[in-house]
Length: 289
Image 1 (cartoon, rainbow, N blue to C red):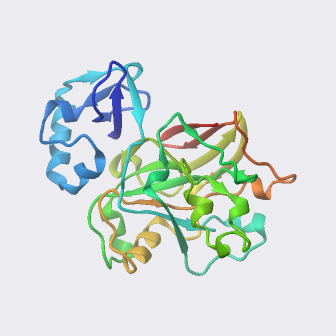
Image 2 (cartoon, rainbow, N blue to C red):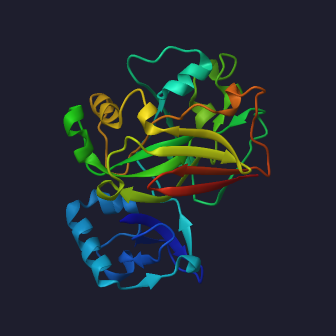
């Protein structure tokens, strides 16, 4: 099952839907049963009973829309937290000639950074070094605090794709005293989607191909086996620092191949098209304007 948030092209409010396959029809589960919210965060907050309802609706095949009839929105909006880990792929550390971190380190993005699939990334006038970072993203399914790595995946609802858009010239000591917040949290800096694939369908988060292309040219091409700290370890570590809530997002790091460490350096410009892909999830397309 692939959960999507969408709006019908003919008009109307946001809806919550399910796809059975990539590029498949969208089953409007929130239209069939009024007890199902029209957004995924509220759906998760209501507990596992709604998931069972959703499964029954999908099995009945009611209220189906062709993909061409809808606009896909970001599959998660207004999460309580967006948590991101830095330097979590070996190749990304290698391209910077940095040692692998013994413990993960985190920063955050504002929930307002989220952008829909096929949406627009605004190139801010106050940066000249806008960069790409494709990331496997965990969607937390239930309240999570002080868990062990061996139990961590029990708290996962599913996985999606994010672009951790980064203003590199704001990641220096000269800007914001070296804090990364604005480098990562300017408007539209978190394209997300196209769907949240439930963990049972996605399988183990290791051994997944992860790619990023700019204007059709592949820049990042890796595998989640290159992660330094596993998804389980990241969740456990975070849960001993903060309470993870339903709908919270964890961006698990980016592979090597970002623009800052290319030779020569390369950065995003208006008109560029970013394609972010992860096996088992699909493709997230973003347009720089």
